[in-house]
Every structure is written in structure tokens, then in C-alpha cells.
Amino acid sequence: MTTEVINLSHVWAKYNKNPILEDINLTIYEGDFVGLIGPNGGGKTTLFKVLLGLMKPYQGTVQILGNAVSKGRRYIGYVPQLVELDREFPISVAEVVRMGRLGKRRLLQRYNAKDEMIVNRTLEQVGMLELRNKTIAELSGGQRQRVYIARALASEPRILLLDEPTASVDPQRQTSIYELLKELNQLITIIMISHDIGAISAYVKTVGCLNHRLFFHGDPPLSKEAIEQTYQCPVDLIAHGVSHRVLSDHDCPLHYHE
Image 1: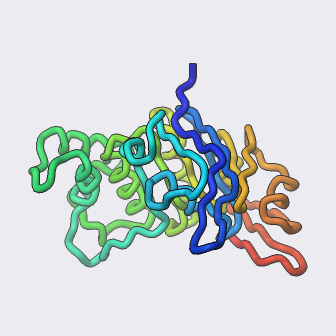
Image 2: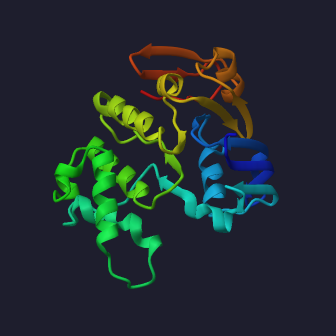
């Protein structure tokens, strides 16, 4: 029987008095690769904050591997959309990944041989082991993203959350990130926020369309009707490889990704 790793039941969350998540019901099983799409402000990042315990819903329940968020979040690794690291600061690839081990030790406890083994293992998983002694400033955008994924993996999570993992990556190298995630999905459950409809259709196993309310679909590819239901306006999809534009019509706000 497949293990249930995340369950949200009738979850509502708000900023100030404005509801952002409205009656969210979602069950994710071990080994899934979920893609979340939706317009800006539709609640995708808010959903991640709820799962990470950074925002508490005012209604509904959230369970992670059968635990409340306060206990279950230790099973989650997170790669935010923007990682604020000074590229001029002389920090090595290995040191960045080692940060992922901080939650596995007591305050001021030194890193040990197990930590170094896990750092090397995760760097090997993302294809960056040979560059472990390079500084972050020496890496390309795609290489830095692989390092940040390795840092999340170093916490030994069972669930990996990624918020726009290719947003700062050169388009020619985006495919390699998606291929990496596809390989990692053999070992870990993944939930990915993305505006890249091509990647959602090509790589994920299940799709969630979130615009305050969640429409969860069993299998990609997404239909034009499902996307229009989410963005609440007509859209034209123009595809070249894995690059897509989502263009609105008439009075709808513009949603663009390339």
C-alpha cells in the first residue's frame, strides 16, 4: 500500500483579512512528483509556507507523514525561488551543502564524519562532487541551483519542495535541472511550483492548479481548459521545446514565462 506523506483537509489561510487558500483538500502519496501551477498571488508559495510551519491555517488540518506540521516538517527539504547568498563571499560548494545538516545536530555541535559522507553523497547525486571546493561565485546559475538542491537533500528529507527551481537558470540548462529532479524522484517525493507548463507536462506525475482554490488532476498533460479554469481567462500556449508562454487575452492580467 502506498504511504500517504501529505494530507490537507479543508485548509484555509489568509494574509491580514484576505483569504489566500480557500478550502484546500489534498493528499499526496510517497513517490509522487507533483507540479503546481497558477497565477501570481494564487497561493502556491503560501501553500509551501503552511507545509513548512511558517504560516498556520485559521481553519482545517495539515498532516505530514501522519504528524502535525510541528513534527512532520523535519521530513521536508525546501529549495526557495530566490536564495540570498552573497556570491562574493568566499564560501565553498561543500560549505553551502553542509548548511543542510544544521537541523540534525545540537547547538554548537561540530560536523562529523557522517555529515561529510552525506555532503559528498548529495553532491554526487546532483553531479557536483568534483566542484565541492569551488566557491559559489565561480559557478553558473544552473550549477548553483544544483548546489541548493543538494543542500536541501543533505537534511535527509522524504519530501522535497521546490519553488520555481529554474527561475534563475539559463534556458539551455533548465532541462538538465528537470532531468535531475526526475532522477531524484526515484528516491523522494517532490512538489514543484512552476510557471513552465512544458516542464509540468513533460516531467511531473500529477498536477495541481491553484488559484486560491485547488483543482487537482491525476495525470499530465494539462488541457487548455484546465489552464484557463485556473488562470480564469483565455490563454494561448506557444511551445518551443520546453519553453512556453502563457498569454492572456482582453482584460486578464498577463502571465508570462519563457
